[in-house]
Amino acid sequence: MVDAYISNVPAIAALFEFSVDAIALSPTLGIVHRLITAVSTIPDAQAWLYSAALVLIYALISLPIGFKLGFLKLDVETSWQIIVGVMARCLLSPAISEELFFRILLLPHPTENATPATLWLWGCISLVMFIIYHPLNAVTFYPDGLQTFFNPIFLFLAALLGVICTLAYFQSGSLWMPVAIHWLIVVGWLLLLGGYKKLNP
Image 1 (tube, rainbow, N blue to C red):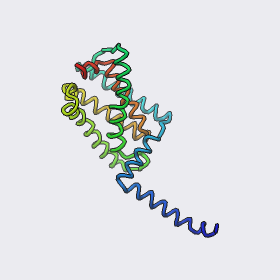
Image 2: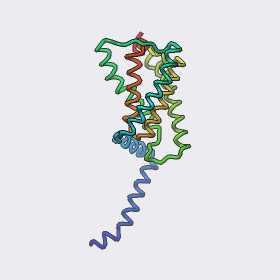
Image 3: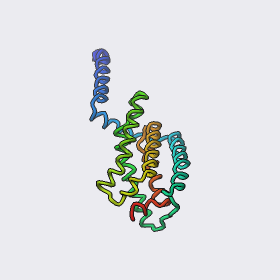
């Protein structure tokens, strides 16, 4: 019986390999696998350091431009209700919801071993959709954000955010790195740099 099992090992291995290939070739199953992998990947120390460097680069670019052109101003929210509400809501949306769609579902996971050309292509598609989404959201669901979401400076800063979130995802393979970056930057803008009043006139 053991000999019979051993003789079937190559056939079992071939069947397993075929099943894995079938999952990769099936769009629905491939997306589910990508989602599960991204959610279950825990960022390591290198991923946190890399993401911290990306946030620093973002700050060095966005703060001078935002202050110089009058889009950003130091305006600290002091109401605990507003602070807690913003921090909680921003974790779900935009951080988790937008990163799930614009990064995880659209971009190849690092374990998929996509070619650089494929990464560039889907990275650009994701970025364009991410930028367009904001004014479209204002027109359809959030009219209070109309003036802000059509502002060229806001769109530039959103594009820069999309770029660093994409880089963090490609480096870490984890949903949680771009979520942390997205949450931190949006919360910082809303609570410290006048964003809350812009979106709640």
